[in-house]
Image 1 (cartoon, helix red, strand yellow):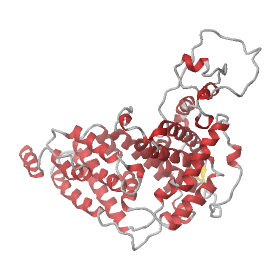
Image 2 (cartoon, rainbow, N blue to C red):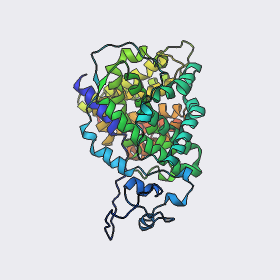
Image 3 (cartoon, rainbow, N blue to C red):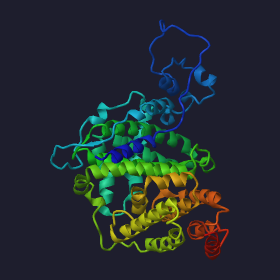
Image 4 (cartoon, one colour):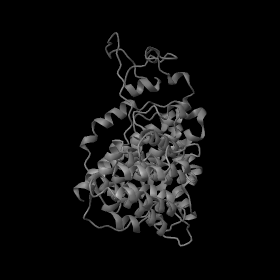
Length: 453
């Protein structure tokens, strides 16, 4: 695998690690362990922090830290916090080796063989009450969540039956399926959102840990499929987490919507490196239905975006000879046009063209563009706003993309406001949100740029 592909794979895992900081426990007195009887009846928080619980209701430790005690709530809703595990995951991220393709050829695997790897991997932090909640996540996935991405009958069978069965032998995949289901439940049930978000985050952390361990080994015809599909679910969960969180908290993250989207771009780069390392095995194996073409699939509206981008390229191209940044931005527009045409031509009923474009374009953009967008370059942000149209269209079919386009368009408009390029936001922003209007007309902006040039 080329070095640049190896480095991008690290980002797939690094950008998905949860952010809560680890908690510390300060006690006014230290007691010897001698004299304490072993008990498994303590609260979940004390178990997770590996401290003695006095089993009062609520326990003294939870009162001291002003935290909810699981002994006060029904056991079916209690689950250990994930902060400590998350901090341990972050400390080891820099040592993650990239996936390597195995030179050994083996027969093509098929999903459906049940083995006991999942039982062997049970995490000691999962108490019995948490397994009841995890069972709820898995049942919800196999009865409801899988249907939100089942665009064909064959894909529905794969997502509902074959994939969970394979996940029993790939615990990290099962954890990620449960995490995605948890985000969906949080989206559907605002009254229990906090509980489901905690469950989803816990399973997400464990999925990342397992995926990282498996990416450190050789990619083989037996494991490349599960690594690739887990990567896809990780990216979908990144979108879903934003959609599922409380509306008033969506902008309280340490990352802005733009930065969060650029993180997803890095993750897609990592997913692509897994795909390119085992492309033939993935295309011809259990996931081949994802790539099967269908001449009856319709993808016409995405071409309207291609025509608009060609118009945007003209004033940028006129300045590209004098500015290396402009040259880079022209190539970025060309890559988005190419992605648009490619998803329109490669018709498949397995997934809508808009959804495929969301994954395809980040694979094509150069790293320089991500730096320009993060740095607030107005043209880079305008190009990103046109990409947001794909997310807006995809939200019509897939719940986890809801609210993204609006949040991104408002963030981009705030940064580009006052720029001579601002009018080029009119088309994508008005399409995404009828209440948003540009500051200038395109004709006015073009005239202004000609005078400056």
